[in-house]
Length: 492
Image 1 (cartoon, rainbow, N blue to C red):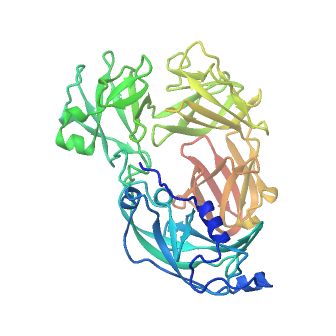
Image 2 (image 1 turned 180 degrees about the vertical axis):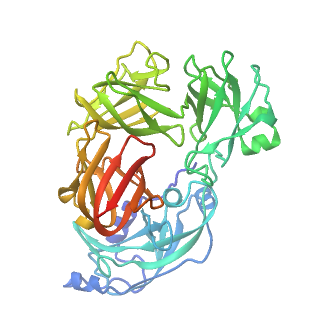
Image 3 (image 1 turned 45 degrees about the vertical axis):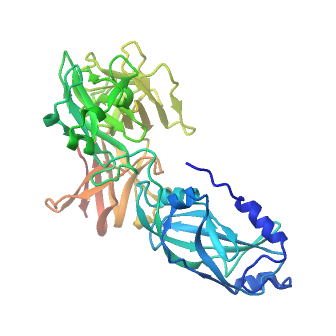
């Protein structure tokens, strides 16, 4: 892409500030003796631009694009510099914004097309196209280290909508990708093509969310041969544009995608999650268990659950050393242990340990934050082969009833096996959650189930939605023996 061969915004504004005859409406007057008072009620007006903006055309012409015009500027002190910024908003409420520097060229307020293109990608979409872009302008008078905002601290000039066509993509990313099964020579079975899921959810734009995944069955002993195809390639049955895999390990677990690469081959047994990043042309395969089991000597295995075969999480008891397995059998591989290539990291408060996983049987077990048998919140990311384990040394009720204040939250009492937590005669009112360790690193919310014999029963999930209850006094029980976890409130 061409570089814009123009003065930088800083150089140009300094140049203008040093000139006595730069052309703005109503040339600058004399220095105002009370600039703060003047700038609070400044006489500045900006006019919108009506023409559509093509960033590609501007870049090809090596030009900045005009985004507004100065129509009035009265009595602006000559020893101050006029600085106009432009905020690009995600919508007309400017819920998300990014700020773009502008350059004043005569009466025109202009911006670098590269920078505007990047701003639109940041708050709207990376997908090339024509967008209606909401913009507004904070304006400043600057002298040395003094920077005064015209019209007051919250003032904006000229909210307007620009019609902007962004750059064509350097790399095309489509919204749908397929796993196309092949024979060992790479010949595709088009009828067997399997649509992958965008990991951001249905309807996600590929340019903004280029990661796709799908669970498949990988039969032993020959494994599973495949290539990757975009929607357009599969529709056209264009075998030459299918993406093969350049493997970076001997089990076919990771690699790069490209049309010049050979057929992909997964040889691990059982369910496998294939994940690609269509922007980075990366490929990864990982085990796709319906749940993972926390294996620790002296305690019964407990499950980590998943809804995407990528991230697994749950509550489990651990006696210091532990592993993760696809079954409750501690001798059946694959077993996930601590990777010897990286060191596990303990948080400053000593409650959390994070690290990397490996399936090497010779690797050491992971270690929990404390040596005695305790209850933990554990999460794992199988494609990334990472884990986190956080000690639960306190569970408490927090919500509107106590101003969402951790210090005055109501602590629950654990049972001897640590799997049931209770409290009696708790005054609740409205929204609330269950938090661990008097902070928000680990918390539980969820949804209410139908009433059962006067009891209120809730399904609990880690980081679930706020719970809700009518004002009253309740006995409280949290049960981690069941899945999903259960909260029961019994009104007194």
